[in-house]
Amino acid sequence: MSRALLVDAGNSRVKWALAENRRILTEGVFVHGEESAQRPRLATLARPASAWVSNVAGPEAADRITALIETVWPGLECRWVRAQAEQAGITNGYTEASQLGSDRWCGMIGARAAYPGEHLLIATLGTATTVEALHADGRFIGGLIAPGWSLMMQSLGQHTAQLPSLDAAEARQILQGAGAGEHIGSTFACDTRSSLSEGCRIAQAAFIERAWQDATATFGSAARCVLSGGAADAVSATLRVPFTRHEGLVLAGLAWLAAAV
Image (cartoon, rainbow, N blue to C red; front, side, top):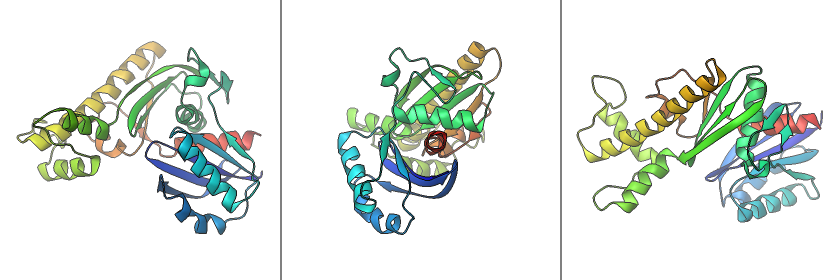
């Protein structure tokens, strides 16, 4: 099977990998705007047969990614993935199939490939927190979108007069220093920064727990909760349902699509 370049352009970062027959050979990650710094490393790799891209970061990001690929490998075929009505054994339950984000679509393909024949609740904790309910027979019955952990904390800081605006890195340091989330007797915090950090973290966990309960009830048996994303470590520490960690679901889905051609 020919090698393929895989690109997952999310809202905050771009992840890439070189894959062959659904196996990741090498990978990397960078923030938007640092495309030029990736050229030396990519230039050391053998030319792939094609590139497969999931982009939810908008047209400017698409232009930068296109320019990067064209600079390193002129004329390389580039396929921009869009959600389909049916693909890779999954039936899209969205009213308008194409409105589903390509990252969510590829993530479901990757999750189904990793856990075939299982009911799945796929929770991705990035800039936004999304969940997808995927029946064991491949029916995507729908999903939910909420602000991510960092976005939730930043929104409170920006729209209230007396609350700080925290990011995930600051919140992790605060929670580690306070011992919050370790179930030493109480999750209630005694200072504003800890209250904000832990309150938003519990909100994230409760969102996933409710979705898991509803998915399990809908399916008639327990769904496997699959967690990924930058905030997954922090939120999973306070999550009260069983879960499986799997990073790189979008890249795994892209690898499946590339290998299926």
